[in-house]
Length: 269
Length: 269
Image (cartoon, rainbow over all chains, first blue to last red; front, side, top):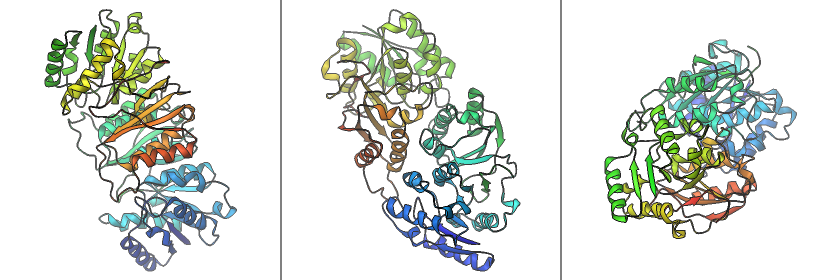
């Protein structure tokens, strides 16, 4: 099991990379190659678009890797997602692509292109307290498809997205077909009024209205609303599901935290 | 010239209302009725959806008003915009509807319904330093269609939107036809990475790609990006216009500030 780590969005820290390499040595069930591109810095991004795209395309085309793991989110994979999914080499089709948050732009593009993608923890989760558990969960899925790594209530086909990322990819060439999907959403660092506005936007979309159900993961680090918004994220999501006729499926076990679980975008479990 | 003020989004302060009434007495060229709904508080909003919608529909149907003026933005008019534009009474069609920022949801819905809408300063602008100049500019447009109030470089048909509001209404029933439009955008309190992500979303939209040109107003109160984003809002907007084939028309004289000018959504000037 050979894993390539690239950073299509923001820069990975050396500290997280060192901890990942140490963990993999300890586990002895996989090898990891952390691409030097992960440490590039170009303003907000882990190198210019061209460098991020080149590193990603390089590991996608390399038959020696079984998994392409996105080092961290942040922002920026949307800028290269369309190009990353174009004219795919055959070698790209026999791999798993794993990450979450901003990586959703790639998940959408790659799933649409027929690749095997999954929502799940990333190397940057070492920066969370007790983050090793999250990183191990992702590795357990990659190495042995450990069912304990999975979100427990998935119905196929499933997809998981950061709500704000999902909103931003609607109407773009990245937008996947949501027909019959168990759609899991979560978010982080968004005010309640923004969550309400984004739910208005997302649930108005005719394609999103075709989901089998929508489930709400955790919404972390919500900044204070001034004045208090008056209802929480659960009430907000329930209301917009009701207004749009989307079946609300309850809570989901994903989020920007160490409990975040794996959601493969497969058609069966 | 009779003006009705309602608050489809957030609550108006008594202070701004008092200053508006004093200014109107001083001007002696118009009357203003500040609807009591403007002072309701329901969490984030100026009263529950039902109260905001009822006040808006009441003044729309009242033949004694020539103008419906949105008291302030914030967030929330999207929650009532579709209902506000449905089954319009004839009296609603002989009025001007004016405001900016969150009012863009109503602008889109009302313009689509054939009503006469315009982007322009609001009563809440009294809270800005030297804000009376902005409020007077809006009144000069309402009362005498003063051409000095207009954004100076408009080409018909024109529309103006807060960028984040524009993004949120795409794909909803509120989305207007952008064919041939001189589209002015501005934003406030958004990080550069968010502006970049929103421009990705907006310029991917096939309808938006039909604009005659896109022009960038001012982007105020941009929070610090950590790390520095590496390019400013002008470079961001120029890049996404270039990537999407949208003609970039340069800067526009609108924004969340006292210099904000009027942009009527008319087909000729």
